[in-house]
Image (spheres, rainbow, N blue to C red):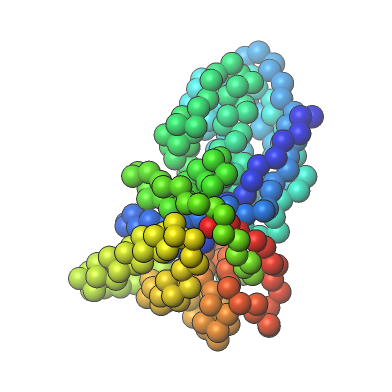
Amino acid sequence: MEKHSAKVSIPFLGTIVYRRRNPIITAISEEKVFFEINFERRGNGKNHLKVNGVTFGKTLEKFLSEYLEGIGETGVNIEINVTSHPRYFGISTYASLSGLLMKILGEKLGYEVTFDDIVKYSPLLETGETLNYLPIIMASRISSLIGKSIIYRLDEGYIELPSKTPLKIYVTLLNTPLVSRRIENNEFKDYFVHLEGRNIIESARFIQEGKIPYENIVFEEAMQYVFYTIEETVNLNIYFKSRCLAFPDLNYKTILLCLDKPTTISRSEITVYL
């Protein structure tokens, strides 16, 4: 089996709002995913895909199946064994793997797959749950491929961030989904959507100046409380005291990212570069 690895980029600042396309910041980390590929062509016939070692294996198999079908390939047998990956951030690991595998498998099949090809066509391969989280997935996928932290807006592109300032954060995985709060007043909703978007843009400006946007992170906490039913997902004392932000993960779980160490829940410490 061929051995490969990919950097993992994680969501750092942003809020997913239904039917809105506010920007999101993803941060490149020291985390990596390691995997092996066994690839065979057997002529015509059905493609066979198997992904082992991750909880989102079926989701990745579906993505790759759509990819092979889209480029008109048949009779391909692929087995992918993920041998090591971050304990948390399934959504980021999925984003990193899927993007890199488009390039690796495409080239094995005789195609020249460019970065622009991946950015253009990978959103078309997402289905179901991953489609709901497309802004995070695309931001993490692009960031992983270029090895840089970025600010990204769906369908509008990205801007690279310096990726030089280290920041230790604490992450944990919650076995509860992150649910959007129902807001009936559209004028009220639009006002806060605008504020949230401006906060992300302002945060990127601070990061470009080599600063950590601590005040913007606290503001984003408030925005997430507006748009998510945070109180049903995590203890609010932990959320606000530890300066945490919540992000959706695959299999309807939630990632909690905190600047200060939570004392009452298990967590891992990682370093990101802004």
